[in-house]
Amino acid sequence: MKKVANQMLVIFGASGDLTARKLVPALYNLYKGEHLPENFVVLGTSRSDMTDEEFRKKVVAESSFLQSQLKEQSEDFVKKFTEKLFYQDLGKRYTDSYDKLANRIAYLNEEFGTEENYIFYLSTPPSLYETIAKNLCEEGLTKEDRGWKRIIVEKPFGYDLASAKALNEGLHHYFEESQVYRIDHYLGKETVQNLLVTRFSNSIFEPLWNRNYIHHVEITNAETVGVEKRGGYYDKSGALRDMFQSHLLQIVSLLVMEPPINSNAEEIRDEKVKALKSLRIMKDEDDILENTLRGQYVESTVSGKKVKGYRQEDGVDPDSTTETYAAVRFFVDNWRWKGVPFYVRTAKRMPTKVTEAVIHFKTPHHQVFSSQDVYRQDNKLIIRIQPDEGILIKFGVKVPGLGFHVEQANMDFYYSDLDSAQVMDAYERLLLDAMQGDSTLYARADEVEAAWEFVDPILKCWKESDKVTTYGYAAGTWGPKNSDELIEEKFGWRNPGDLLTDESGFCILS
Ligand SMILES: NC(=O)C1=CN([C@@H]2O[C@H](COP(=O)(O)OP(=O)(O)OC[C@H]3O[C@@H](n4cnc5c(N)ncnc54)[C@H](OP(=O)(O)O)[C@@H]3O)[C@@H](O)[C@H]2O)C=CC1
Ligand SMILES: O=C1O[C@H](COP(=O)(O)O)[C@@H](O)[C@H](O)[C@H]1O
Image (cartoon, rainbow, N blue to C red; front, side):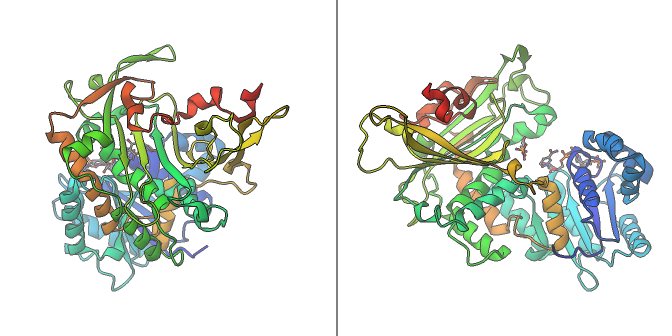
C-alpha cells in the first residue's frame, strides 16, 4: 500500500447529512484500520455556529455506526478518533471572506504538522462549488508551492451538459484538472472495480465480450426506499440525473470500454471516455419515446405497511411529474458492440434492493436439444454489485434421466466466501485514494461531460415534449405495467427477487 502523507481534510458543508452519515464514519474506519497518516486533522466548516466539541458530539450522535462503535470499541477509542476533528464556522455566507478559515487552517497545520497538504471536500449544495474554489484560491490555499492541494467535489456534478461544462470551466480557473477529484461513490464499490478485473484478467470472458457472442446487456438498480428526507433535491433531479447519468453510466463505461494498456488512472479513464462517447445519442423525439420510459411510485401497501406515494413525500410538488423510475434502451456504436442493445433501469420503491449487470449471451447457432426453452437457457453472466456481492454464471446442464432435457445450473461466487473478504465501504476507499493522490476511481472532466452529452437530449425531451408520459407504479412493485415493452418481449427484465422462486437452478427440477 502507498504511504499516506501527513495532511488535513477540510470539509465544507460539515454540518450536513453526508458528513455525519458517510464521511466521518469512513474516516473512523480508516483510523481503526490504521490507514491514516501520523499527522492528520479534519477541519469541518459550514455556516452553523459550533465549537469543536459540539461538532464532535453532533457527528457521533448522528451516525448510528459511530454509536455502535462506542459500545463495540470503547468510548476512549472513539474519543481518540474524534480528537482529530475540528470545526470552524464560515460566518453567514459561503461568499464571505475566508480569513478566519485560512487562519484556522494555518494554525492547525502548524500545531499538527500536516505539511500544508490539504484536501478540500465540497459537501454543500453544488451551486456553491465554484464560489468555494474561488475563495480558496484568493486565500492562497490552492497553491502547491509547499505541500499539495486537492479538491473533492460531491455529486451532482452539474444539472445538464451546459452546467457541467460551466462547472468544469469554473473549477479549472482555480485548480488544475489533476487536483480535482469528482466523486462517484459507485466507483468506490468493490464489485464495480471488479468489473475491470473480471473482464481483463480472465481469458475466458474477454474473447466472448463482443457482438458475436453477447445478445444484450441489462443493468438494474433497484432501491426499496423512497426519496426519504431528500424530496426537495430529488424533485428537481429525478432518477435519470440522480442515478443514471452518474453511477449507472459509470458501470456502463466499465462494461463497454476497451482494455486499457495498464491500470494507471489516465489510461483507464481514457478508455472510459471513449466508451461513453460511443453511446449512440438519441436525436429526436420519436427515438426517445421509443427507447425510454419514466415512472413514478404511487401510494401502496408494502409488507402490510402503507407507503406514501411520491407526490405525498415532504418537499415534493403535489403535481410533480419527476420520475422515480427510469429505463433506457440504447446502442453503442463501435466495432465491439454494434447492434447489441443495452437496457438500463433505475428506480426507487422497488420490491428489493439490488444492483446488478447481466450479460446475456446468444443462443448457440444450432439447437441440438430441441426440447429446451432456448431463451431461458441462454448463458448469463450476472455481476451482483450489491447486495450479496459476487458473480453468478448460468449454464445449461442435462437433467438426470431419460432424454436430453436441459436446465440451467448456477456457478456462484460470493465475495463473502473469500477468507480475506473485508469489503471497504465506498467512501472509505475513495477518501483513502484521494489522500494518496490516486484519481483512478474519480471521474475526469471529459468523462462527466460525455455522460451528460448522452443524457441531455433525453432530459430535454422529457421536459419539453407533451407526448412523454410519467406512468404510475405501485410502491413495492417492479415499475410501470408497460415496462417490459421496452425490452425484447421474449426476455423481459430479470427481476431478481422473482428468480428465487422460479429460476434458481436445480431447485426447479423437482
Ligand atoms: N446525503 C447523501 O446521502 C448524499 C449527498 N450527496 C451530495 O453531498 C452534498 C451534501 O449533501 P448533504 O450533506 O446531504 O446535504 P445537507 O443539506 O444535509 O447539508 C448541506 C450542507 O451545506 C451547508 N450549506 C451551505 N449553504 C447552504 C445553502 N444555501 N443551503 C443549504 N445548505 C447549505 C449546510 O450547512 P450550513 O447551513 O451550516 O452552512 C450543510 O452543512 C450535496 O451536494 C449532495 O448532493 C451526494 C450523495 C449522497
Ligand atoms: O447517489 C445516490 O445513491 C443512492 C444509492 O446509493 P447505494 O450505494 O445505496 O446504492 C441513492 O439512494 C441516492 O438517491 C443517490 O443520490
